[in-house]
Image (cartoon, rainbow, N blue to C red; front, side):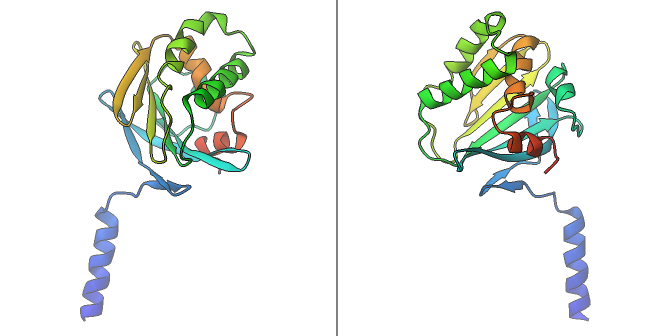
Length: 188
């Protein structure tokens, strides 16, 4: 009898308990992120690796599930990327170099139209990143890309063209890490 009650309680709790965060590389990415007043859902997640080193766990957050990278990059709707760092001690210079390479790949070298936005964005990545640090990159239509470090607002870059180039770093034709791209698209 007691066993049946305990089993019943277990199943009841399983039904009403909120879903767990997604664990990637020892980091837990939440199921949702707030973009302004809107909840965005975890579309997919993966690891950013460089030379077999796990750099960060990355998650893509959208209103609704989507696996078409082009559609996501070109969409003028709320979305976010969370980077939760696994590797301890990524320098600001290493981050900026990686961003610059990503922007060049995303725009096929045509950086001039978004140069000011890139410079502003890079200015948010001057401090060394420690294990567990979280960066949230949240796009809000009509406002731009908001960058947060450990929950603290770093600044905003306006313009849909900048947003497209930024999200193409992860989801474009030449992504920073193809395995991470597939994870963010929910294909892994």
